[in-house]
Length: 131
Image (cartoon, rainbow, N blue to C red; front, top):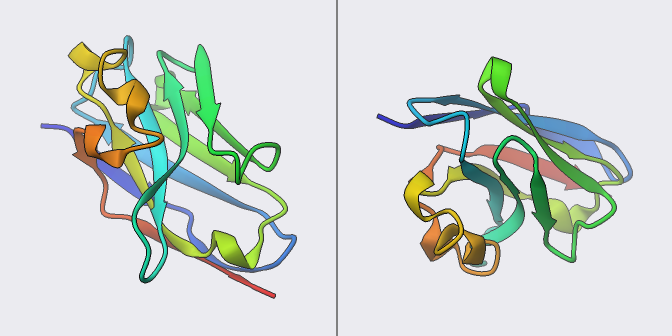
């Protein structure tokens, strides 16, 4: 059974940094596809960043390019999201997510634009950025 558990959220002032972690279990450490998504109050869930097969390929939403970095540590079965230069508009619940390993490139590669292609979700961690 796949389990994704997020941690590291909190409150920070604009311009500050946070690092989110996602502890992964029951999911293959190789040939995988994972990502971070977020949902602000009253808005739809949106893709933030995705990563494939131990960091071989990474993709970002335009709104976070140059500020956020997604990474994996397969030895620790953990995925990270380093968030720098945070803005109030980054305030949201952040979710760890994973695709079906069998359809990483046929389905999950569309997930950054459409979260419907995510197979597994974590419970979320709140990030609040004040101005």
